[in-house]
Length: 122
Image (cartoon, rainbow, N blue to C red; front, side):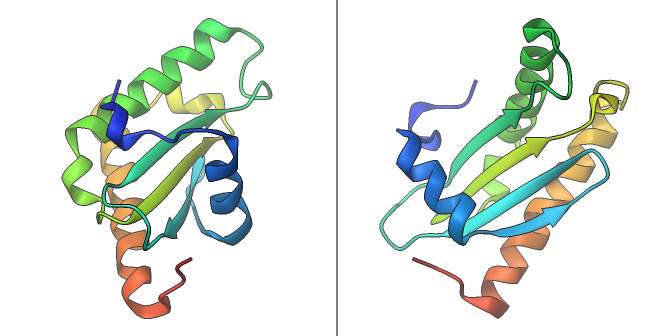
């Protein structure tokens, strides 16, 4: 689990990222990114739909894997950024941890670079 300062607090903060954020896709998951001037630390949430697996244990396993990757690579996220990682395929469990980490870090870097070009902030 990541530190409390890197997590979202309340549903409204997630809604603003869903409404105004930019989306980056991979075949198994997507990352929604939004830069906010109001925050000092990056914030991260992982959403695993029931469509991925009906079993909560499977969904939690996926969530824990992704949170661990984020915890180890939190320095790659630019500080005022909010990220929501949405998983939409169960195949993510079949990926090797290093391959999954590479995909996630690659999309995070893509989101960081886009911020410099687009400046979509609230």
